Length: 286
Image (cartoon, rainbow, N blue to C red; front, side):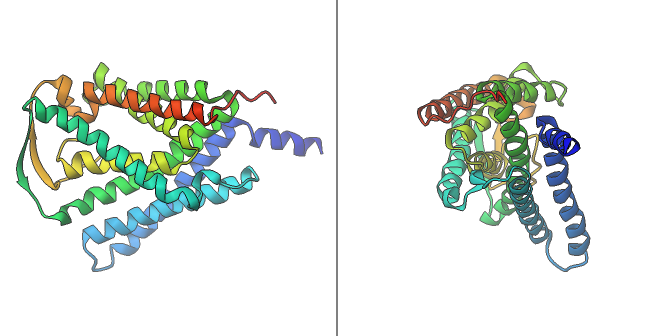
C-alpha cells in the first residue's frame, strides 16, 4: 500500500506529469508523421495533398492523445477541449490571430513600407493553411495544454504566466537574428498572450486557433517573413521595407514594436476577462 501511495505521488508530481505528457503526445505525433510519410511517399498524391493529410493526422493524434492520456491520468473530463465550445473559440481564435497580423502589416503599410507586387491564385493558401494547422494544434496542446496547465495547477495562474513568459524569452535569446525586441515579442505573444487566452476561456481551442490564424496570415496571406514557417508562394507576393522597429527586420513583422504593444494589450484584455469570469487559480496547497 505504501509503495502504491509513493508511486502515485511520483506520477502526479507536476514535473513528472509534464515530462510524460510531452513525451507521450510528442511520441504519438512523431510516430504518425513517420509512418504516414512512409505510406504517402508511395502514393501518387501531390505534395500539397500529402502535407495536408499529414498535418490533419498529426493534429488529430495530438488531440486524441491528450484527451485519452489526461482523462485516464487525471480521472476527469477534458473540458478544455469540449466539442460544445469548439466553434465559437475556433472562430474567435482564428479571427484574433489574423486581425493581429493584419494590424502589424497595416502599421507598416501606413508608414510606406508594405507594397503588394502580385496577387497569386487562392490555391497558394493551401501550404500556409497546412503549416499553420500543424503548428497551432501540436504546439499549443504541448505548451498550453500540458506545460502551462500543469504548472498553473500547482503554482497558480499568476506564477504560471510569469514562468511561461520568461521561459519563452530564455529559449529565444540565441535564435538567429535575435534582438531585444524579437525576444520580448516572442515572450509576450507565445507566452503571455496565448496563456492568457486559455485562462480567459478555459478552452484550449482559443490559443490553438489564435496560433493557427497568426501563422496562416503572416506568411500565407501577406507574404511577410515568419521564422517558424517557410512558404514559397503566399497569396500576396509583397515587399516589406523600412525601420526594423516597425518591420521586425529579418525576424518578420511579428517581432515589431507594434506587435509587442498590440499583443500586450490583447493579453491584458484576456486577463481582465479571466478575472471577471473568476478563472484565476490559486497555488496548490495540498
